[in-house]
Figure 1 (cartoon, rainbow, N blue to C red):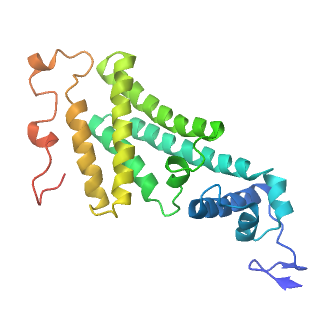
Figure 2: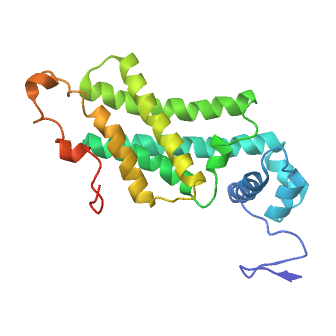
Length: 236
C-alpha cells in the first residue's frame, strides 16, 4: 500500500479523481508541455508523465494531442475575450475602458503560465481549427470594443470596427514586444503609455448627441495635459 497526500492509500495506482478534476489536471500538464516544447515537439508520453498518469488514462479524456491543444486554446481564447468585455462593461469612463483593454493583453502575456504562447505564438497556426480559434480571439475583442464605440459615438459599424481593430492590434503587438524585450519598462508604465497613445486618438471622436468637436471645444474631452504623455517623474 502507498500513502498519498490526502491520507488515502492505494495499491501503487494513481488516486482516482472525479472526471472534471482529472481533466483539469491533464490540461494543466499539457499546457506546461506545450508551452515548453511547442505542439510538434510535445508527445502524449510527455504529457502523461507530467500529469503522473498512464497514457490510457490520458486517452480516456482526450482522443489525441490535437484535442488536448484545442481544449487549452478554447480556455485561454475565451478568457482574454471575457477580460476585454469586462473592461468595456466595468465603467462608463471611456479612458478607463481603453486602459482595461490594454491591461487585458499585458496581463495575458505576463502570466507565469506562458499560455499566451499557445494563442499568439502557436507552431500550429496553419491548422484550420487552431486558426479559427486564434481569429476568434481577435474578432471577439474587436466586437466588444466596437459595440462600445458605436454606443458612445454613433459612428457606423465599419468605422467603429476599424477603430477597435487598431486598439486591439496595438495592445497585442505592444504587449508581446514589451515581454520579448525583457520588460524593460515597468508594466504599469507600459500600460499607461499605450493607453495614452490610444486614448489621444479615440478621445477625438465626440460622444453621441454632442455637436462636433469644433463647436464643443475641449469641454467634453480630456484636456491636452490629460491626453499627452506625462513628463519625466510624473504619473500617467
